[in-house]
Structures are given as structure tokens and as C-alpha cells.
Amino acid sequence: MIQVFKDVKIDWLANRRKFITVSVLLMLVGLGSAVFRQWKHPGGSEAFNLGVDFKGGTVVTVKFKQRPSAESIRDALANTGARDAIIQPVTDKPDTVLIKLPLAGTGGESQAQVEAGRARVKIGLNAFGAEGDAYEIIGTDAVGAVAGAQLRNKAIATTLAALVGILMYIAFRFEWTYGAAAVIAVFHDVLVTLGFFSIFQWEISLTVIAALLTLVGFSVNDTIVVFDRIRENRRLHRRDSLYKVTNDSINQTLSRTVITSGLVFLSVLAMVVFGGEVLRGFSLALLIGITFGTYSSVAIASPIMVWWEQRIEAANKAAAVARPLPGTIRSNDSPTRREPVSTRAGKQPRDARRA
Image 1 (cartoon, one colour):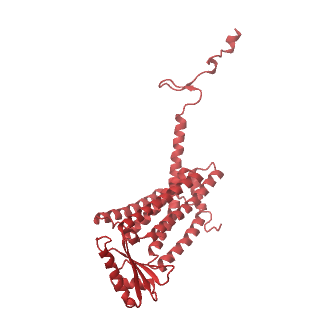
Image 2 (tube, rainbow, N blue to C red):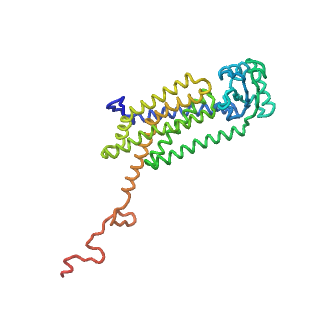
Image 3 (tube, rainbow, N blue to C red):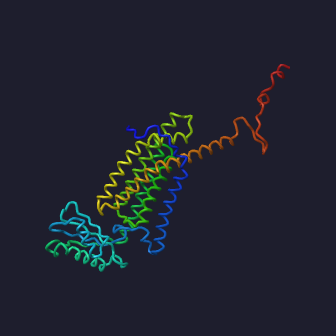
């Protein structure tokens, strides 16, 4: 393996309180933003800027004779006030696009709302030519709030199922304390990422959920690499404390962590800068998630695992001290005493038998 850093002697666990404090503050800020926005908007829909897939809207299917770029369509619709439009090309039909608009007002997905969305799209697309000459609206559908709630619930259930599967796998391959620490670190990564989306009101769509699931896999993979080295070093250095073994393992895998996470970070950064509006939410979620996923593998998962293992070891020692030794008797609250062997039932002193 390529070694970017050699003979690293950083005491990571010495700063564990500072790391955890920073993480708790970030999660509290994100939670505070969501609670404040929900309190400010009693409907609760403004805690996060949910996209059309979740809160409902109008989907207009348009067929072009010469399809313009997605950016051109988005700019044309923005001139009519539809700044949150999502442009989705149809892969098997190069001349067709889906235009998704959020519902205007609070009237629900009524026919009036659908027609209003269709009219707005038509006004915007007239910049490319008259309807029938440059384009044709071949379908208009409504994505209801019920469907949005189902998508949201399925997204949450999928994420929780992935975390449960990760916990079971790591508990089987390592120990349950390792699995619990890894899942807590993943929760930390997801909550911090969602906190950024609440603070800056970036739109949450299905692609963002896909990014969060990708983040779960990436973060766990990085954590498992550190845990695997900890397990190996505990076998090789049985006399060393878990504190020292963990620090050494993090330092030994630091080069791998920097190379892997650094390359992924640069790739995602390019998506953020050059990916455009379609990939903006997906790439931002990955950028934040990868940054804090790498951080949590070192600063969250490992300290939690060490703390948990030390607690279990201390509890086992206390139980061993409290457990009475074999061959002892205890009467009421009197101290434990051992019965002399010579006076046990069925045996007499040697001198007495001679007499």
C-alpha cells in the first residue's frame, strides 16, 4: 500500500471530547434550524425544502422537434416564475422531457392546479416557438401529497433497513460494540448532512436520498477498515492497551484514508462545480457526507467503540470480584471463609485414625 504518511504518532483519542463536542454542536444547529422552520411554518413542510417527488406537484411531458438543452428549458421557465422546475430527459425518447413543477399555493393537486402548471410551462416554452411547431405537450399528470408521503416513508424505511443490516453484519464479523459504534457514526453523518440541507434550504429529492444511501456505504466501509486493523493489532499486541492499539491502527490506516477519501472528494467536487442544477443536490449531499464520513471514522466511531469496550471490561471485572470463589460459604453478612479440608464430612485427622 502507498504510504503518504510514515511513522505517524498522533494521539487521536486524546482529542475525542473535542471531536464529539463539534459533532454534537453541528447536529444541534441542524436540528435547531429544522425546528425553527417548522415552528415558523405550522404546516411543517418548510423544515426541509422537499422537492416535487415528496410534496407533490405537476408533471408535464413535452415532446420537442429539436430538443433544447435542459439549462435552456430551465432558464425559459424561470422567466415565468417557475424557478424550482426539474427538467428530466426521457432516456429512451431523445426528443422528450419531463418537466416537474411544485404545486402553486395550498389548493392540493386539483385540476385547477394541474392546468395552472401546464399553462406556466406553455408560456415558458413559447420562447422556443409556438406550440405545435417547436414542441407539443403530450401529457400532464399530478404527483399527489399522498404519493409524496409514501415516497418519504419508504426513503426513511430504506435508510433504517440499511443501518440495521450494517449493524448485524459488523456484529457478526467483529463484535456488537463495533457494529453499534459504526451505526452511531453513520447516523451522525446522515444527520449532519441533513442539517446542512435544512440550514441552506437545498432541495431534497430522490437523488439526494440516493446520495445518503451511498454515503452510508462509504462511511461504513471506511470505518470497517479502521476496525479491521484494530482487531488485527489486538491479536498481535495483546499486552498493549486498547487505547494505544486504536491510536496505532488509525495512524497506520491514515494513508489509505487520505488517498481514498481525497480522490472521491475531488471527483464529487468536480460534480458540484460542473454538474449543473440537475446534480447539485446529489453532489452536495455526497460532498458533505464524504467529508464527515471520513471524519467520523476517526473521531466518532473509534472513540465510541473504545469507551464501550472499556465499560464492558470494567463491568466484567466488577462482576468477577463480587462472584464468590469455589469452595467458600457465606453466612448472612459475615465475611466469606473457607472450610478446612481436614474437617470435611467423611474425613478425620490422620492422628485420630492411628489412635
